[in-house]
Amino acid sequence: MNEDDKRDAEQDALNARLEKLDAALRQREEEQLARDAPPPERSGLSKALSVGLNAFAEFAGAVLVGGFIGWKADEWLGTRPWLMIVLLGLGIAAGFWNIYRVAKPKA
Image: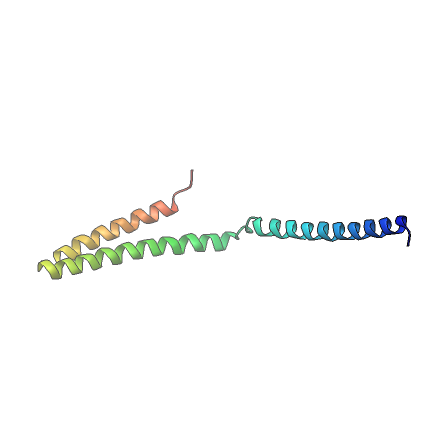
């Protein structure tokens, strides 16, 4: 094998390695683009259900927390049922405020 044949063989091997590396880089870029792509838009019904369930959870949580704190405060202070009524009312008001906050249009 002469010098030119050796050089050609080395050049062919180098070209094969470069093509393999280029293919691996292209595949890696495609995977990265697929990973970074924004999530698909939800349909109108699923978005409405999500907002509705979120509003319900906010309202129910506020009412339950207000009622529970009032109940425990009444037990501790012996003022049954006044603090529970007051804090339950505040919990209901906070629940409606949370619904308003969740449902108002975004600026």
